[in-house]
Structures are given as C-alpha cells and as structure tokens.
Image (tube, rainbow, N blue to C red; front, side, top):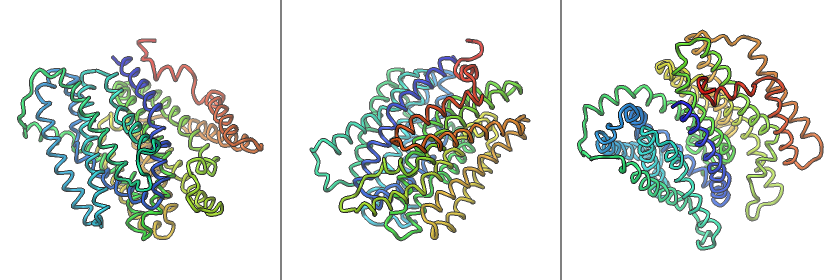
Length: 495
C-alpha cells in the first residue's frame, strides 16, 4: 500500500511538473504582459484576498472524507450527497463573507466587484474539485486522481492559448475577466468529469444533511482549519496590502506578482513533498532512531532541491527577470531595464522566503503528524501579527521590496520556531556538525554558481552548466547518497 502511494506521488509530481510550469510561465505570464503591472496587480490583490478565506469552503471536510472512505468504502454512498450539500452551504457563506469584507476594505468599484465575483466563484468551484478528488483518493483510485489534479489546468491552457494566440479574439480589448472566465469553464468541466467518475462508485444517494455529523467533523478539523487560515494570511497577504496601502493603481502589487510567480510555482512542488511525508512521519513516530533518520534525509532532500533553486535565482536574478519581461509598447530601453531592475530587487528576497517556507514542509508536517496543532497555530498566529505589523511599517516606505523582506522575515521565523518545537518534542539530535554540513553545501553551490557565471558565455549555457554541477555537489558534499534517496521512494520492507 505504501509503495503504491509513493508511486502515485511520483506520478503526481511528474504530471504537475509537465503542466504547471507552462501555466505559470506561458499563460499567466503572458496575461500579465498584456494587462500590465497595474491591472495585473489589482487582479492579484483580489485573487489573494479571495484565497485568504478559502478554508471557509472546506473546514476540514475534504481531509475527513478521504480518510473516512479509505477506512470503509461504503461511506461514499452514505455521506456523499450530504457532504455535497454542506459544501454548497459553505460556498454561500464564503461568498457572503468575501463580499462583505471586500466591501469594507474598499472593493466597491464595478470592475473590482466583477473580478471579486469571478475569483470567488473559481475558489468555490476549486473546493468542489478537491472534494470530488478526495473521494477518488479514499477509493485508492490514484491514477484517476492524478489526472484530475491537472485536468483543469490543461483545459485552461488550451482555452487561453486560443484566446491569446489564435487571432480569433480582439486582444485590444483583452481584460482579466476573460482569464477568470476561462478558468471557470475549466473547473466546471473538471467537476463534470470528476462527478461522473465518483458516481460510478455510489450505490445510492441520500440527500439529507446531517448537522450533528457536520458538527462532529467541524470540532475535529477546526484546529487544522485555523492553521490553514493563518498560514494563508501570512503567506499571501502582501499583494493585497500593497494594493490597499499604496495609491498607485496596483503597480507595486504587479511588480511583486511578477517576482512571486516562481515562488508560487516552486511552492506547489514543495507542497507535494509534504503530502508524501505525512504518512511516513506518522508511521515512524514511535521509533525515535527511524524518525530522526527520516527527518534528516527528507530535510536534506528539501535543502538540496530548494537551495539550488534559491541560489541560482539569486545569482541570475537580472537575467531571469529579463527572460520573463518583455518591452512594453512605446517603452524605451532605459525604461525597460529600470523596470526589470525593480523586479530583480524583489525576486531574490522572495526566493529566500521560498527556501524558508519549503523547510516548514518537513518540520511543520512532522508536527502535524504528531497532532501538535495547538503549537503550530500559536506559531502561525504570531507570524500573522508580525507580518501585518511589519508590512504596515515597511510598505509605505519600501513598497514591494519591503513586502518581500517582510515575507522573508516571517517565513524564516516561523520555520525556525517549528524546528525548535520539533527538537523539543521529538528530541531530535541535529548537532552543530549537521548544520555546518548544510552550510558547506549551500556555500559550495553559491561559489560554483558565481564562478560558472564569470566567463562571458551565454547566460543560459552557464546556468545549465552551473545547475548540472550543483546537482553533482549534492553527492560530492555527501549531503545525500543514492541509498538515502531510495529509502524515501521505496519502503524498507520492499527493498
């Protein structure tokens, strides 16, 4: 069973690596290029605002449903219709909340409300997709679930490609609502397919909401739901605050958004790693030696993956930002380079934030597996307070650079706090030698990346050469061995 689960994670990772990069750097980037930083910044502010309240759409139902059906497949027929009705009620409550809070925060213009409507609707539809997928996961239909995980993005890519490049649409009037409506259509098609697959396994439907049952789920999942809400706030609130605190029509939020794109893409991949680790940590909690080894190996893998990405993005920050930025109509070369320079100031700071956030997918997942949600919520709540207070101070003066710095500080502090909690609760023996070993690896990667960039090669060639050498440094510095990587992929009893 565990071997089957790990294989699904690898397949899921492969599909996401195949599809998501094109979405982020093909479609989403092209949309920002056509809209401009100001309008895209307004969209990003409203999108992230709608995401802050996403947990109201779920309240732990998806996670509960997956575990419930996995324990007894008959629970699918017993609870599916009732849970679907509860999801619908939660969707209505969510819509009321985001429009009420949005209105109080200044989203009152017609175009802003239109964007908020479509962003909110897409969040509701996405929550239904994830709910339907939880049924597939509970039935152990892993391949079907993996395909559904990217089906909406594949459809959206195809539809947006027609809108952007077919010549069938007048792009002189292109607006962000088209972008949101395409996603809506993709989500609706995915829901239809997922519903078809799920209903094939449902023997009968009983449309009766069991409020007592819902209350039990809510009580069990409320700490986890609170954690998700708090982490969403301190991880995604910067574009919203930039757009609200600065009177620049969303320009600085757009600058932040262009630099944030790679952060978000990498975070989606790191999050899949946490999905793999959760059941493995849970199974190892009673064996101190095995748990320590698993923590070391998984943390080493995370540092290796994200450390190389972070360092190379810092070294090649100017070149990467030029790659994803094109000259605007009527823009001089000097104005273009000045604009790229603004992106390049924000980008490396956010990649440091990405590195810190990724480490929480090891220590935070370990605490989740142990049920230490009270401690995690306390850390997350502290992160929210620090984030908002610091942003209120730095954004008016340092704008998008200040927001990125706040993100880095908060992600570092929450990651360090989670590590200290794990060290105390699990008596982890990660001594000075271990941390010096990690610093040696990161230092070697930084030195290698800098030296390879010095010759006057094409930067893409030097980037590729540097990336290949840095991968070799993982084994040269003995951060990881082939045996350790295999231990994460193949369970011990299968080897």
